Length: 289
Image (cartoon, rainbow, N blue to C red; front, side, top):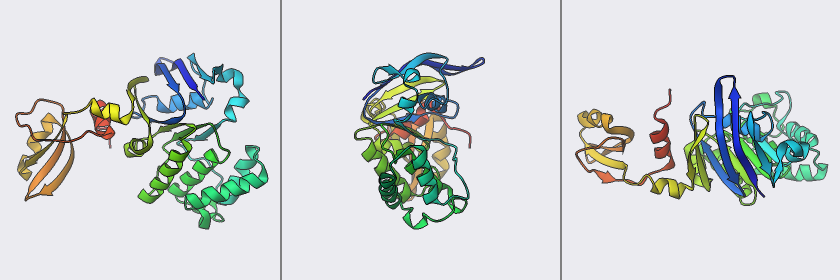
């Protein structure tokens, strides 16, 4: 199975949302990271055929997805960032309705829906109306509709939004199993989610691929830039001009400060292993609160 993105660009008037993006994807999980406006949603909407590229092409198993049309779309599971649901449907009614739209066999749909509702902790709430669901509950329900017909390509936009830690773990585990033999693309701001399960991380910036590699490859290339410093509380502010502070904890009556060094610093400190979140902060800085 192969999904090829060949020299894809997308413009909205004078604004270029994607700028000659090329990727070759096979089975596995891909984490798509970048700040707001980087082009992530545009790329995902092109892949699910909600948008047409201005130039370039997307191929699935060697065939253009425009030519494949409905045959290609039947192979996709999609979880959009914006929640779309019917407030007076129960969770069960919503999933049966989506199963009918997908043309699923009724008995198979019943079995699969039950399994996923139990796995994602929604079985006891299956007969509640969706207007009484929390945001995280609706998000898990929408994930079920995306995966229940066993798609070959799964495209997820912020899949764990509104979830507590246990719910996020359940969702990550489900996505991890699916990614063993499917193509899964996850766009998210929760860096830890893709860091845990993605075999390949893609950084998108201003419509271009900025970084592309396994978490281990990307983190190894960042070696030496993270330090711990033990300082008095009043000296924390003196570290700020030298980089991005990512953590402060009390240790032996002092403050242990973890910092991504962006400028030379006269003291060595204690080295720390880098994370994907460190690379994200290095590349994109602090986003507006």
